[in-house]
Image 1 (tube, helix red, strand yellow):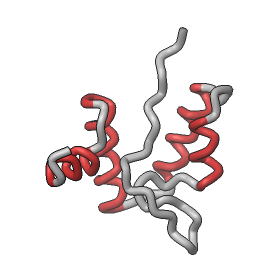
Image 2: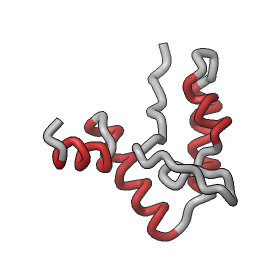
Image 3: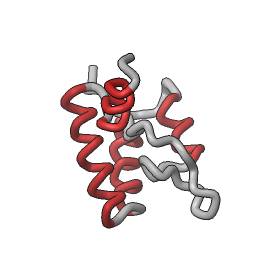
Image 4: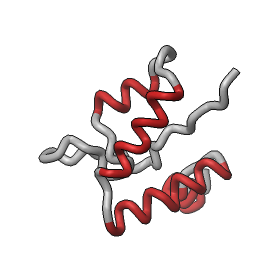
Length: 89
């Protein structure tokens, strides 16, 4: 069995009405749906990660990379971690 590719969702789920990209992960709504489908391959997910990184720059890219690395290590994005801490959930 191959290793699971972690979803790029960093819990900032709001779509830009002009570009159609999520402010947090830069995916389209269709790409988000593809990540949830059981038959979506790790190859597709890996390539999609490469594509979404090309859509970001500056602070957005830096924030995404930091939160995504944290999610891979800890199982939770930095945004969600801070949200849970502030709301004591």
